[in-house]
Image (cartoon, rainbow, N blue to C red; front, side, top):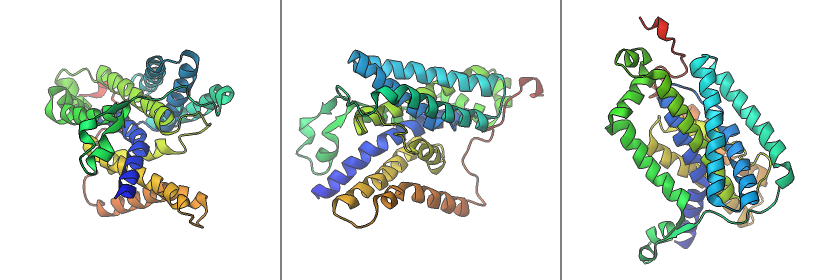
Length: 309
């Protein structure tokens, strides 16, 4: 039982960055904008958090810096895709390449330096006597709790509020939303910016909680897994939580297999989450080949207001 609880706790720690990145991507893509720059924004979030934390020793300053840089990257992507109506896939890929290169340059002097602190934990001693639940939730860090609250808030926002109805309308039919008086461009700018801030926070969580030292390319493809999680979850925040922890468990499983002295090469064990990602995508594509994908109908399609009529 203790081993199972440890495995689940490790899956939650490994899955939280994926969850935060997937939630940011869901918010962006619900507004009809494709975001393939998740990997680059996560890397920039991680390196900025590391640089700021080492310079100031303040966790709050580090998180504010992450939000600021991620918001700027989001605004650039929004300007290119919403205002200039450039190809959204190309813009996202350019964001990934920029983030990978810039983070490698900025992080070179601080590579391998341990963080002076980490995200504080929220201790709940009254949960400790409870089996399983106590082992999982009694000592979680604040960012993990924030991700739980965010899942609930986003689900209620999308499905239970008028603003969420506007968001879905913009993602499915921006022409109809515009006729209703919704400011499509402003809404998309806001969603892309806020979503990018959550993606940057995912990179900061990866550094401050999961792996407390900067290493070049430390996301190791997690941004692309987060993009796949959006599809697995069918753009639903609650499903994204389950999918993120599932892939977090796969990531953790590779380390556990190494610890028990398995002769399987570590490189093959690290491939497990990515192989499963490909297999799940193939399975979902086959199973849902004659069904609606669940994606916003206007996803990736630039909106030209002059042509709405």
